[in-house]
Amino acid sequence: MFKKVLVPVDLQDTQFCLTALKLALREVHGNGAQLHIIAVVPGYNNSIVSSFFSEKEHQESLKRFSELLVSFANEHVDEQIKSELKVFEGSASEEINRYVRNNGIDLVVMRAHQRSKIDAFLLGSVSARVVERAFCSVFVLRS
Image 1: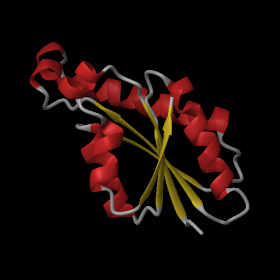
Image 2 (image 1 turned 90 degrees about the vertical axis):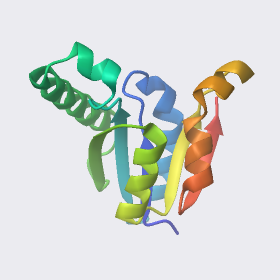
Image 3 (image 1 turned 30 degrees about the horizontal axis):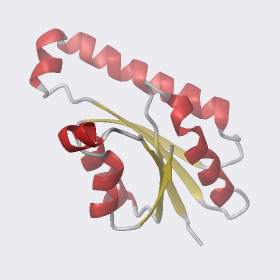
Image 4 (image 1 turned 45 degrees about the vertical axis):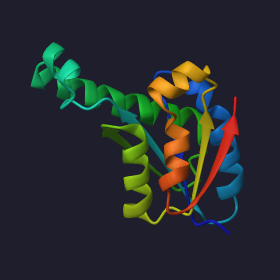
């Protein structure tokens, strides 16, 4: 049914994303579907980030995040499954939705952090913003 399935991964807490990944793998396995795994890290244009890191450190950190994503995929995704891996910088919800639009994603499978009402109000919810703005089906798993 779905030809392109996306799983956003938090590289700081990969264990948190495993349930979503397992569900996505179940959806793509044997269906000829393509698995997309992305990670979004804070952007270098963020004044807090750029004030602490040089451009060289910035590039090295992006390389390291890419290596972590490849390692995560190698550990959890069967090599027979077609998959795309990407690391982006910026707002997680914006980058996820941009990726959905630009790559014709049919389904996003992601976990939702359980936050207090105050945290949710102050920080917002990435999963809620993805659901609000996505141009495809979104399956959100509660923690």
